[in-house]
Image (cartoon, rainbow, N blue to C red; front, side, top):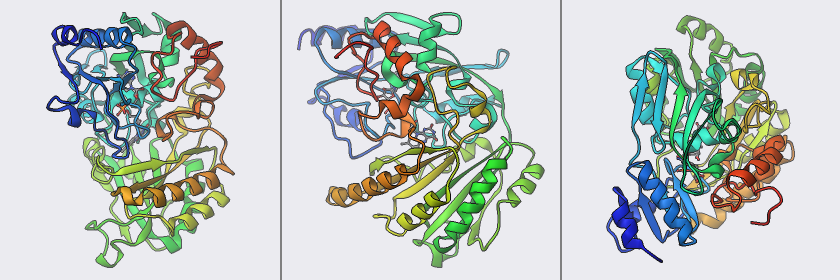
Length: 458
Ligand SMILES: Cc1cc2nc3c(=O)[nH]c(=O)nc-3n(C[C@H](O)[C@H](O)[C@H](O)COP(=O)(O)OP(=O)(O)OC[C@H]3O[C@@H](n4cnc5c(N)ncnc54)[C@H](O)[C@@H]3O)c2cc1C
């Protein structure tokens, strides 16, 4: 490798190789199944370091990967023998309350973003676990509790500062490099390294009505049929995700249910709590074994699932989009719930629609505007001794759910590093390939759900 000492002197952040202290911590990401060893890690302190890293990586023919929050389940942040551009030191967030915008650096987490915006009683929609990176989430689309009300994270994006394959610094927005801006909103990490994002902000709904209701697995088929009917009519202030899981030892659940299989309805109503009470009550029915829905600060709700989805377990997911949740899928989910291989495994159903569906499929790269729900079974386990058993279970359920799904898959929930570009980018894949040929003809940024440049073999 040429010029590593020059790289070290050009970079104000850290340059780490395998014998350097901090290397193992820097290469470890959320999914413990991923154990890759980059040749070099550049922990950038700013845009200039990112430029230096890209130029060094290209000059040395190293595969470049980008780490935002390190949450991607496929582990696209890390490549064996490659150069990892680690943005985890670039986490500043600057709120402009007059313009109602937030400027967010490329390594910020949702916790960083919510912390700053909520100080101004403002918010932009993100995801539901606060350690997730803003960058990866937004470049793939990004939805959480407020997406039905205010749209995807990508829908609220106004501008991106980007380091290109040549190490140039450019801005993409509706006014400048508009085609690139189109591609960045759903095209994942294919087009360069985003060093900052500008988001539109909204008034913070505080408090929101938030929390879970839990039912026994025996009642899950009825509960999910009621849920399926409810989400077709629900107002956009309301967002409910269902989860088939093993009950944790939470205080609102009698001890005899701890460790048993349950279905949880995690409910959010981001309007007046009184309206929310009435609307969410129509979702209730049957015999709930635990119920803890009440007023809560949005910032607290954003962290409530952090422990459940903490870093360090081995993970493999399958994910399929559905326009509606069909009975056959409900029955399959309930049957597979009985065979979940570990207590940490779950099967999540995320509700989309509302403001997400207001935007046209061709308005930006994110194509899944008609998905009503995304069903994502996630096998999670602790020991490599369980790899084969857990992987076999997840393959089986994934194949079974796909029989009735609509063929699309959310790029940020795909656990395979490659092979699912058509499912991820759908009707927008052709246009994305054309833009890739223009902005990254040599496919430098390919450690992602890759978009091959049009008419190319690279
Ligand atoms: C526990 C958990 C909860 C989640 N919850 C949600 C949720 O509620 N809603 C949702 O929509 N998604 C959710 N996700 C999925 C999440 O959006 C993806 O994992 C996403 O890739 C995370 O981004 P990251 O920056 O943390 O990931 P990283 O692993 O750091 O990056 C993933 C990829 O994104 C690209 N990338 C990252 N940063 C940059 C950058 N600055 N410039 C260019 N490319 C970049 C690169 O291609 C990189 O390989 C969740 C994931 C986990 C593990």
